[in-house]
Length: 90
Image (tube, rainbow, N blue to C red; front, side, top):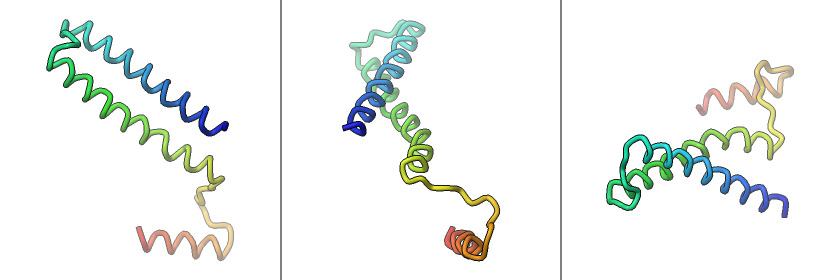
């Protein structure tokens, strides 16, 4: 249940931020939001904006949800092997 609530809150926050950005764009350009150009701007802002916000959050969310730890300097032989294996595949 907590996951669903967080998901919905995140989506609502993204829509709110992108809606504010759209209002600013339409106010500065004087463009009518109901025109074809306005719909194109709306699609661009929500398409690219949502993608960039999702990309910015995905690394942090993946690390936090899995409890992953980034190995900066290997502390033992197993970590050294793991780092070398990942480097070879990257």
